[in-house]
Length: 180
Image 1 (tube, rainbow, N blue to C red):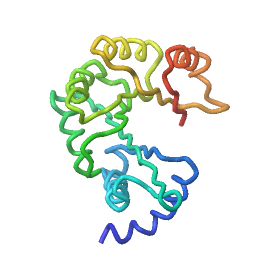
Image 2 (image 1 turned 60 degrees about the vertical axis):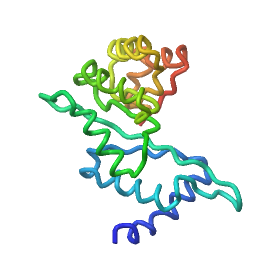
Image 3 (image 1 turned 45 degrees about the vertical axis):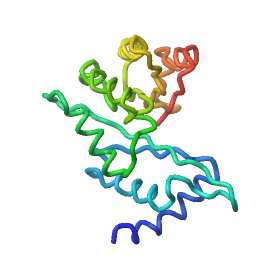
Image 4 (image 1 turned 135 degrees about the horizontal axis):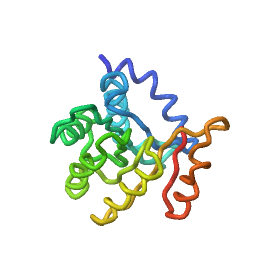
């Protein structure tokens, strides 16, 4: 079975959790949902917590992403969240990322009720330009929610997040920045 096959990978997960890596980031578009299924198997196997030393367990946090596609219909994001929850075998997503800014205003109209329902605990923005980040943040804040993070390409060679003021803005607003 898939679970038995995945148990081989779980030793590396235990090692990662013991070294402080407790958030697992996935997306429905990663291997057509297979990545979420594997993470779901891990959660099921460990019942959501990994023992780091005898008698001490750490919670596993899950973040997953939604990538809006051209000509997205109303309800697509909600359906995607429900499918991700099913594949992951969980009741809520710790951080739900809007993977790209395409239709972000429409996406936020669906995200906000999911936040209120508790299916999503936090929202982050991935690959957004600075102007889009500021506008999306205003929308969330106007509904009483805070941005959980910004996830953008960042390296020694790709420094747009510094050059365009995103890192300073995140620091100012106390928003964690996740570089990939």
